[in-house]
Image 1: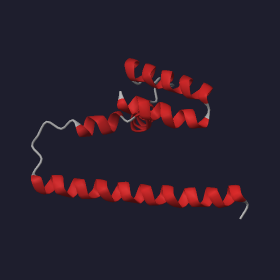
Image 2: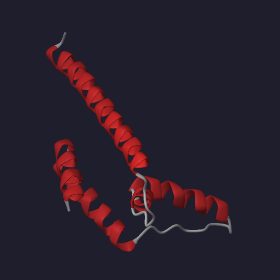
Image 3: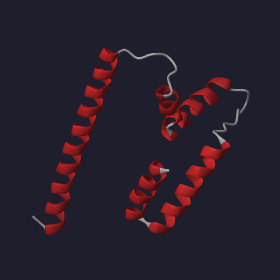
Image 4: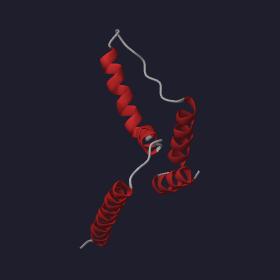
Length: 108
């Protein structure tokens, strides 16, 4: 539920009308699953489209995160360090973009 709330909050900043439609569409897609049509018996094209849709919807990450085997502490530390670095990089990028937008709005 928290992920849906974050998605709604970010989309409401852009445009409220399209935000609600995209959230409803996203929830409907999650409920129905991902469907891909196979055209002209081209299975490879359908598989690549399925893979792209899985990556964009986050299902691939969910499957990866639900591991049933034991993760060693050293692996956990490495993953935690990578996640922290990714978070810091994202915050730095957001700070830089904000500074650029402020300069642009102020006309500097």
